[in-house]
Image (tube, rainbow, N blue to C red; front, side):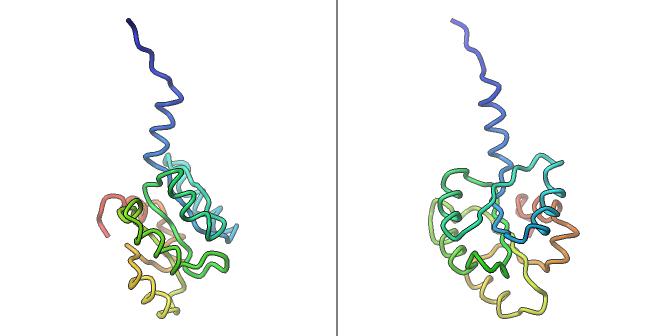
Length: 139
C-alpha cells in the first residue's frame, strides 16, 4: 500500500504556520505592511470589522495578530478582550501600533493584554522584524 502526499495540504499547512490576522483598515498602510511581509512567506488575512476578529481567528488560526489601535472600524479594546479572554486564542501574540502621542490608547492596550505596542512609524519601518520578534518571544 502506497501513500501519496497531497502538495496542496502541505502548502496549506505551511501557509497556516505563517498566517497573520491583520486588523488594519487604512489601505495605504495595509499595502505597506503587505509589501514588507509577503516576500518573506507571510500570508495576511484581513479583519475588516469587529466581527472578523473572532470569526477569522477561529477559522485561520493565525500565528499572530496585527492591530491598528487607532482604527475607526475595529474597537481594539473589544478585539483584545476577544483575543486574550478566549482560551482558544489567548496564546496568539498581538502586535499593535498607535500614534506615539496617544498615551491613553497605549495604556488601555497594555491593560487589555497586547503583547507588543510600537509607534506607527516603527511598524512601518520594521514590520517584518517586529513580527519575527514577537513570534520568537523576544518582545
